[in-house]
Image (cartoon, rainbow, N blue to C red; front, side, top):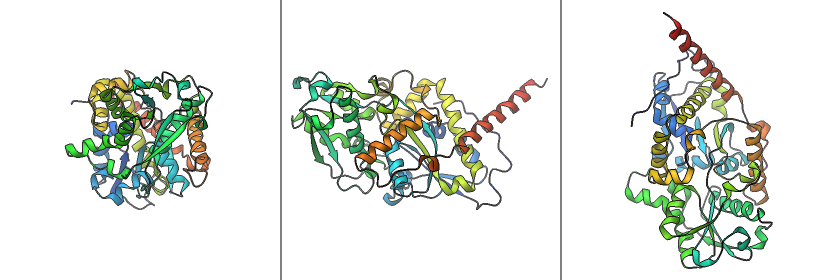
Length: 377
């Protein structure tokens, strides 16, 4: 795959002289559409830092469960994370030293499915029905799958004037750890094991042990098509306020180790600048974007098209817009209400707008240099 690469103008002072030097930066991102994944694919992010003697390492590529666990707990020093907001909120509520430096809003699907024979045609028909909730009882990190499912049900039911108390929540235990799904999918077995997260849900629905299930991600749509399930509702399409449509995948959070942000602000800003450039690149390269996302989610490109629609390439922007911060605050309130967070979060202390502001300055400076060079006879 050939892609255009936007290279940043290197600063002679990439690092703060008074701060400790770094030779390794860590990153992790969820297997969903993220600007970090695009930036990594474009290659300029790795090349720029390599010239300064800094190597990038992926938490997942280590294969070490203890290291991979930082994808949820964000305990690895000098690390960036972009992905679902529930682990980021959970880690911060438990005292993780992180900074929130960006948000993105990819229109992530959150469908509720049933079998055609159920007779359930609308959200109103769910009253009194059995809705599945998977519980990862062995999980050391937050059970973000359970939280996501409850949020999906709650928002959908509220759109019909109902609540969780109007349905029967059927909990089924899952004897797996989330960290297993974040190991590198280098083998066919590992690739299919990622879909195994839906095994209990699909079996329960087919056996009619429950009346409806909630899925997410493109692989969920793939499996639904395989078993002939019908969709009752997709929460992302509900005519409700943006904050009400918040779930694990929207808004996605970009966080960084607090010490790195404080000691190497220019370095962090340059990483964010690459994400901004990747988002800009995505707008004019829709098919390349679909290929990258399909590989990350381990599904066919057609599934990505059906899941996210034709506008996917325009959804990778990184911002800290008040409406997106408000949506994330709504998510934190939900998680507190249902006992997923141990402490509330001081958003004013957590959010650090400096890297994003500086990243925009860097890109403006680069554009000015390029424009000046092109203007020369």
